[in-house]
Length: 194
Image (cartoon, helix red, strand yellow):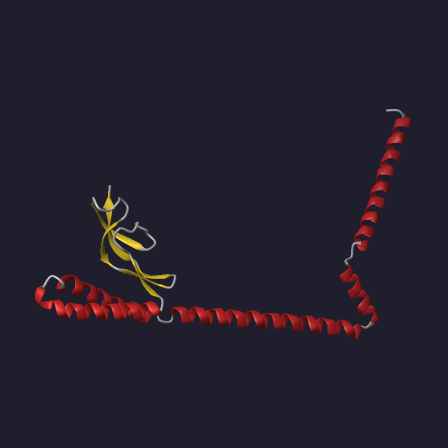
């Protein structure tokens, strides 16, 4: 390499270093210019009136506290509504065996001719109890002919059926019940096989 080429190479390196320094200074200046209006306003207020920035900060803290209090009230209200919705869940779950026994009494008592008047009374009692429970959001789940849904039904067996399509309920062994959108007990069913 000749002396001229070496000198040119050194000059290029010096120019590159100078360009990098200028680029860094330009970048720092650009970052300083990029301050947001809010930051500039905050700096101006702090220089103008130091006690004003304390008042502004106190106001911001107050607004955050008010927002947190409002969120807390809303959360408590939601929890209260949810609790009221499902407060009767335990009591209603305890009444399910009573409904099962009334269903069994109707199922087996209807076969005896001498018990017909008593069965009418049992049926009326069951109907009144179901109506009262429906007012509180309890509804029965699982009917013959309904399509099997593993979310609402528990399959305890399968049997062939000519009257019901495959995958549908042939018999309900034990009624299921739902309280509002919450499943209290799945219906125990026998599903039609192919």
